[in-house]
Image 1 (cartoon, rainbow, N blue to C red):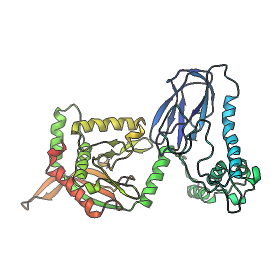
Image 2 (image 1 turned 90 degrees about the vertical axis):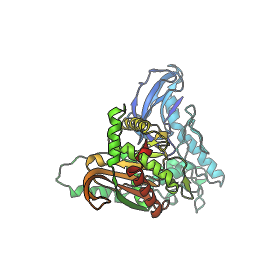
Image 3 (image 1 turned 180 degrees about the horizontal axis):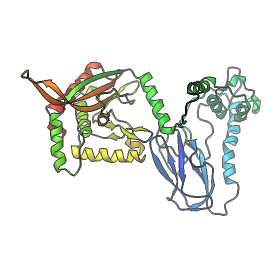
Image 4 (image 1 turned 60 degrees about the vertical axis):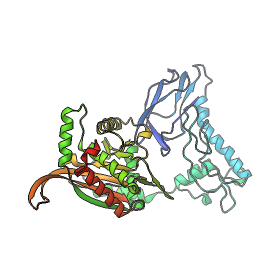
Amino acid sequence: MQILMPQLGETVTEGTISKWHKAVGDSVAAGEPLFEIETDKTSMEVPAVLAGVLGQILVQAGDTVPVGTVVGVVAESASAPPGAAERAQRRPEAADRALGRAAAASGESRNSVAAAPSGASAGAAQPLDPFHGLRTPQRNFGKARLSSGVKASPRARRLAAEASVDLAQVRGTGPRGCIVAADIQRAPQPVHAEPASGAEQIKALYAGTSYREVPLDSMRRTIARRLSDSKQQVPHFYLSGDLNVEALLALRRQINETASVRVSVNDFLLKAYALALQRVPAANVAWAGECLLQFERSDIGVAVAVQGGLVTPVVRSADTKGLLALAREVGALASRARERKLQPAEYAGGAATVSNLGMYGVRSFQAIVNPPQATILAVGAAERRVIEAPDATLRAATLLTVSISADHRAVDGVVAAEVFAALRRIVETQISDIL
C-alpha cells in the first residue's frame, strides 16, 4: 500500500516530513503513528491506515514534497512481493505516457495536474478521506494542443510551466509527435538570471563581512508571500487614535485578584473589538472578489508570535464569549500555536485580527491586513499622559494608541471610523459590556 503526503487544508500544496516513527522492516499497526509532517503553520502525526510492514521510505525526514507524493510503502507482510516501491515510483511516468497517447488521439484540452501517484483522486474537489489518496490543487498549465497543432501531455505541460520551458521549442517524441515529460526533462533549461544575480549582487555588497545564510522554512516563505500579496493587491488605509484605559485597567486588576485565570489587556481589546464589529455590521465582512461576506458572529484572529514567524488562530464567536472563557481559549490557542499543533480549522477564516506589540514598548504601529479579512486592529503600549478634563483642568490618565488597518475594497473610511468610535465607547464608558 502506498503512503501519500496528505493535504492539511485547501491552500496547502506541500509538506515536510519532520520525523519517521518507523524504520524499514518495522511492523506497523493500524492507527499507529507512522511519521510526522510539518506545513507552514502546523505539525501533525500521520497514522497507518492498515497493518503491515514498512517496506520502504521514499521521502526522508527533512525533505519537502508536494501533496499526493508517495512517501513510503507499507506491505501487508514481510514477504510482500519485492519491487513494490520501485513500481510506485515508475507509475507517474507510465501514466504520463498513457496521457500522452490520449492527448495525441483526441483534441480534448486537459487542464488538470499531471498524473498523480496511484490512489490519488482527480476531478472535482473531494472531502478529506484518510483511506483514499489525496491530490494537489488543480492548476491550468495551458492547452493540450499548441498553435502548431502539436499536443502535449498534462505532466509535460506542468513540468514546462515549472521550468519556464517554451513548449513551442520542444520536439515531441511521443505518439504522433506528442510532447511528453521526458522531452521536457531533456530540453535545455532556461537560466533564471535575475533571481540568482539578485542574490549574488546582494551578497557582493557584504563581501568581506562575516554572515551566516539562514534558509527560509515553509512558514517564512508563506508569510513573505501572503504579506507581499496583501500590500500589493489590497488597498490599505489606516486610522489611529487613543483610548483612555483607566476603567479597563481598574476592572482588570479587580478580576485578576479573584479569578483563576489571568486576563490580559489584549483579551479585553479582543472582546471589545468583536463587540464593535457587531455594532457596525458593515465592517464585519470579508472580501470574496465578486461579493462581500457579511458575518452574523464576530470571529476574531489573534496574532501569536512563534519561533520563525507568526500565526493567527481564530476565536470563534468572540462577541458572545464571557471574558474569562475567552481568556482561557486565547491562552490554549496560543500554546498550541507555539507548539505548531494547531488544526487547520483553528486558523482559517475570521473577519478581523488583533495584533498587540504593546508589551514591547511600541507606542503605535500599522499592521498589514490578513486577506480575506477586512480589518486588523494594531495595539500599542499604554502610557501615562497629561490630558485636559471636561472641566478644562489638566490631569494624568493612561492612554493606549490603537490603529485600524482596513481593506478599502470592503470597508470605507467612514465605516472604519464608526468601528473605532464604537471601540472607544466600549472601552471608555461601557466597559461592563465586555464581561
